[in-house]
Image (cartoon, rainbow, N blue to C red; front, top):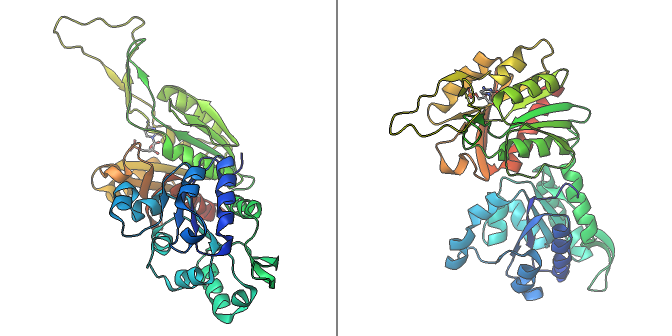
Length: 400
Ligand code: C5P
């Protein structure tokens, strides 16, 4: 599996003769393990049907911006946020011009404007249209906004002309999108990440825990591995697939997590504490199942767990960078700033868990990155996109 496994890929097809190649593109992306949703422009529906794309993607096809039924299913903003990457292929001269102007006059351009995910554009048009100064200026403008331009290819065209303007082969488009995710920002670095909840045993059948899903920590592990790092992921019990090229160290309790964290982080470049560590554990777990006490209250004595990230930050073999999370329900920024200083962290990622969009278990997040000298807000996006932005910020600090 490549970089696209489990990614949410939004394929937007505009109305050119190459639209039929969009079907092959979707098939190849699915083969790589991606989840694919398709947006067809009105022109594209003249060349390829929504039903074809629905059958190939296994998801409903999206065609209209202001369609009651479609908006009730997954509205354009939700679609934009769902995406980990948006690929516009084929992108006609008209779509490229509208993207350059930032127009939002159909579903395709609106989603392109609304998505926080990276956008890639694979142009396809007649060679004369491609060579025109207007198209070239529009393409330059898109590239300057970090939109990935894939192709075009040169050769024989549907209209009989020969020259540059053909849609690149779907295999080459997939390879280019894959390459983009291999950013190599953390090449040669070793990163240790904690994720998920910890379970603190009360007796052989009961435990204390929390609602952490592990999604943010696993997304970070995947993003760090894609950026070229060697990744050790220490996780409490979760129901998630381990990302490619990540070594998983499963643990149950905070005590076990702490032991692994200290052992693995010695000499590492980066430590990221994304785990929701239980602050307390029962003083001693009962060897036998505790029986009900006939209406009397059950008293448990809880003792404090070690603060894992603070121990890592204070250890003699401290990683260059220690990054923590602050999941708060009130006074987010103040609590996070205080926590960063108290725990001796280089960066803290503040996360409002009172908001249903960004709470435990959600697919998306919106966070604030806080260092001693800088603060940066990352607006609502998929946890994968947020993870990539965090990796970019960590790499920038490391390389400074
Ligand atoms: O104090 P609080 O739990 O809010 O701090 C959150 C940060 O500290 C997270 O990065 C979390 O992984 C880490 N932490 C830890 N060990 C604990 C408690 C929190 O590593 N016992």
